[in-house]
Image (cartoon, rainbow, N blue to C red; front, side):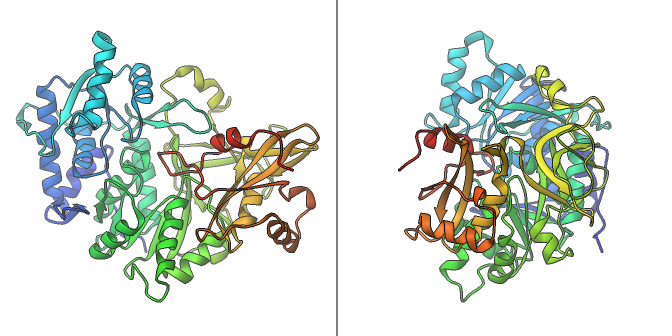
Length: 518
């Protein structure tokens, strides 16, 4: 039975309801310092910060880009800006000056907010950047650790309508240039509430925000906390050994993030397989990257909990999700059931709706879908004539109603005219005991058109897979010979993108695009 979830048409309204319902209940705790804020304290801090920003010239409707690490300050800030009805553009703290400048220009940001972290940190970089932009740049706001406090009596009326666009989240997808996805309170609330239902979150749960809080997953998890009454441990960085120790100290029951987070927790557990590192943990939940099927059994057997993967992206943060109540087969071989209020359709290569079990492009519509990109020239290609968002993902609808994501349109390798799914090969190879992570890419080839290349990171440092062992693994699985990679590359660590720790195939293609090795 799903615990009772609070609801509101706006993010701020949801915080107000939670603070009224359970003012003294813990909401967030700093994993390093142990400083804890309850619901009433978060509401009060957000109101006072909103008033302080208003006094600095930030008005309802202002466009403000902020760049803070995950922590109490960022958690309160996003809610303060929601109270002030600002159009906020969170940006993860790892993005550099070139990316920041491009985003500030494209979004026409009037304010740029960074932490007070000195000349060598974000503060110093922001000052140098804005000096270069001179009069064309936004106003810089530096946020100290001790959040400024204004007079809440100066604030305008709180927001009551969740339909206006008040959020811009950044995504790179398969392109190099960051795109701004425009969201409303309604679209984010839909995703966060569906996530809370999927993980069965309740007041007894202690969660985490494993994604950088400036990622759309940060707000999804914030909404989960406010709706369910759960609390969360916040970490400004995710270093597995350190994170596990902190999670154990605080009795974390739900964590996750993306596939890289699952694998990192497994790696820590394997250092001491005789003792469960996180005995309170009941669920790993996350998305944003493909999940090898074998991970479900590994998490169950080694971590002693359920892995319930979900399907979403910045533009549509939650489309489908697994639950702990789903079967082992569903958990391993699907990305979950379609969530409330969302519609999914599969469109085949002829442009018609695919039959159940037939692969095609996944398209989605519903209240949890974004309202288009900040660069309006991208929107015509992003949506079809009926308003369905083209995800660019390949997948199928199963007879049980679950969605199985099978790859990306751009990840189909055409080898001698044969379409080969990179995801299928990755899933097969990920089960090999020497494979920790794998990316399969297509590389230009004069004979084949494209050749299949597998790039492998070892499960145990120094224990690398060899070519003969890879071939034998595929032959044992009984796959067609054309799917066996012609090229195997070994890396101690695969390159990953900053936002989701997702493997960067673009970087791998550049690195290995030369003539095949002999």
